[in-house]
Image (cartoon, rainbow, N blue to C red; front, side, top):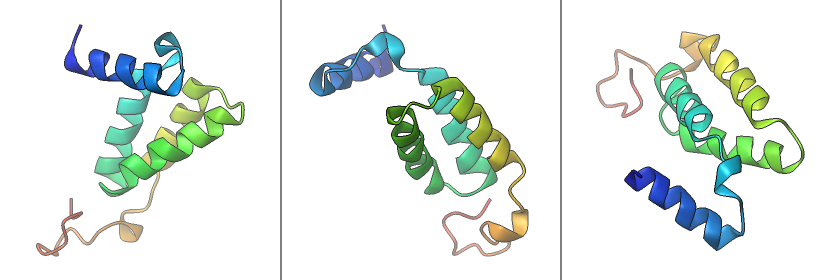
Length: 91
């Protein structure tokens, strides 16, 4: 097991969830896509929103794929200014 596996198992125990139902690769891929294609602080917020949607019955893999696709089409002009070195979210 990895540290991440241990963490997910501990969190699931704390929240009374089944770790087998946690789509870790999908969540990590989604966070990466949002962090790199939209902005870094959007990654944890998007993961939280994914969790809310799944809690309301959305399929985790489908919802993550839809959000990753949205991030992939996000207009650069709506993201951080890549020319601004003072912007911590600049790509």
